[in-house]
Amino acid sequence: MKNINKILSLAFVAAITAFTFTSCEDEDKFRIPALGNGGFIKFVSLPEFDAGAEATSANFVATVEDPNQNAANFALTVIGDFTGAPADTLVFKSTTTFPFDVSFTGADMASLFEVPISTFEEGDSFEFLGTVTTTDGRVYDISRPGGEFPSDPEDPDYVPGTYNGGLTDGVLLDAPGLLSALNYEVTFDDAEE
Image (cartoon, rainbow, N blue to C red):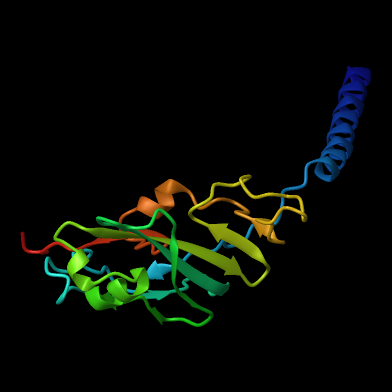
């Protein structure tokens, strides 16, 4: 009986020792990358996305902020959806400081798109797309999914940096209460209708 207890004790010690050394070995093989906050810009408060039906009096009022406090630059581009709108996106605004005003009037949009304000009709809209460059150089571009950027420095579209280091998830962008300002649409409609 004494020999059985000694054998069981030695087997137990051997198992614990093997487990300990195996655990240490596994730790070195499977490192978890350091996690951090990505680039995310949000509205300070929920704006009204219907700017008014009449372009001459239309007004969109909104301010954005950087809740992660890691944005080195935030740039907004805009795509117009109106008769005669260009297919290309236009640069709307950019900033390196927050909070930042992203408000505009119908006259502002007419000037940006270089059209008379009478061009706009009720139901016309503007889609805004954000790009955040974080202080560590990562770029979060809502208009391009990860892996879509050219990696060849000779390519004219090449921009150095790491892109979409974790792609902002669609659930995050659409989640109620988060007030994402990375992709939104403003329409010349009456909010009360």
